[in-house]
Image 1 (cartoon, helix red, strand yellow):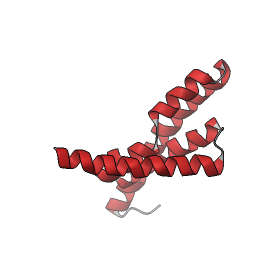
Image 2: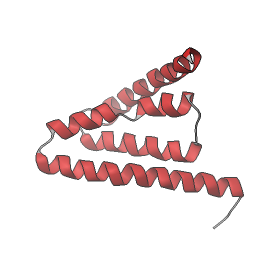
Image 3: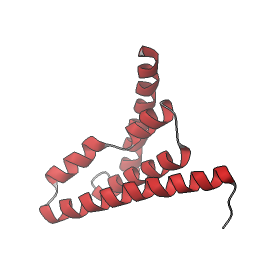
Length: 111
């Protein structure tokens, strides 16, 4: 149990660092950069079907519920509502797309 926690914790540290670097490079004050990071993380989670290190660890640290909550509290009401809807639809949609791509790759389907 403690080994698994250490593995996830190490992955989370890497993911959080990657998120920080991404937001610093792309726009530290932009809620839309955070949205893009979260949607990308969900897409990768759905497509890769990762284990504890990459899934709960790296991708869990890369995407950020706490930053999402902070944006909702600090943004003007209209921006917060739009961001909430975009995050919910974008992240769930990205995960479903990634999962679909992973399933298609696993079965060898071609379009």
